[in-house]
Amino acid sequence: MRAAVTDVARRYGVARQTVHGWLLKYAASGLAGLADRTSRPSSCPHQMIPLVEARIVELRRAHPG
Image (tube, rainbow, N blue to C red):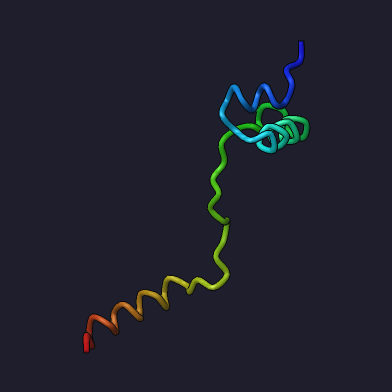
C-alpha cells in the first residue's frame, strides 16, 4: 500500500514539497540519497590562503594600533 504525499507530510510534520524532494533523492540514489548531508559549501572562492592570513595576523599583533 502506498501512502499519499499529503499523509506522509502530515505524519512527519513537513511540507509536501519536502516529501517530493525525498522521493526524487530516493529515485536518483536509493537510500544513500536520503542520508544527511552538510549544507556547507565545498569551497570559499574569496577566502585567502593560510600563509597570507597568518602574515596579516602577525602584522596586526605587532602593530595593534
